[in-house]
Image (cartoon, rainbow, N blue to C red; front, top):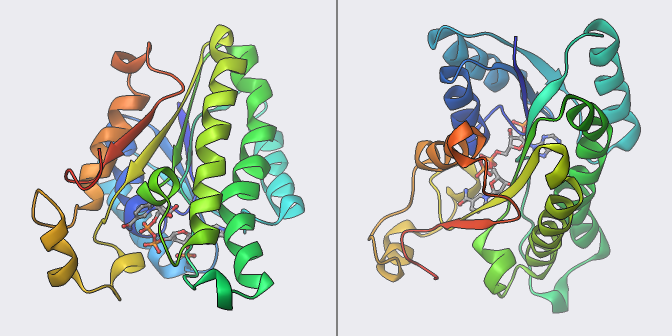
Length: 242
Ligand code: NAP
């Protein structure tokens, strides 16, 4: 059995990625924070693809909770390891820096950037021992270009982009690839409050992207066809920014 952990797998991009990896034969550990019902729906979609999975509920920002959940899993599966990790859990708390309270700054960094550390660090050892691993971090156009009203989110994703490049170089000789996928506007709960008809005028392709389109790119990066790609940040944004 090959195992993949998808953080924030209950909804949106994380769900689509979970389903894609299930289609590729992975057993999926679906992480999420609160939404049991949505996580169950993801599992149902995974099973419809002929694979299976399990829920793994924890807050990626809570180092102790992550450590407990992962070591429990490892104790139950002493001969197996998580070979694919998709660091996808994320939130946005948009505000002008002028009005941004410290908790909005910290929450966003805690989930995207510290969450990356909390989940990735404990899984690295086994990936290196087995000499195969795939880590894909879901970042954002905001972390490449910087977006007004998202200083916290841009900082978190920009930090994650730099971490991707550094970790890729640390682990390449051990058979790991570490890449990032940087979406533009994708139709999920995260973007439901946005004015899509106005925003899409700025997008050369003329529409928001679908989570399944992001999942196809992630699936490619996980596949053996992408063995020579590491340390890359690949945009998927309908031409919005190149
Ligand atoms: P979404 O629909 O809002 O889903 C967010 C997912 O993250 C949910 O599964 C949620 O779990 C989980 N989550 C949130 N905080 C968590 C925490 N502390 N611990 C564990 N899980 C947590 O978001 P999305 O649009 O799919 O975004 C997924 C990723 O893509 C994010 O990193 C986001 O920044 C990035 N991204 C999205 C877009 C876009 O346009 N949508 C663009 C660029 C980048 P619950 O269901 O339990 O709440």
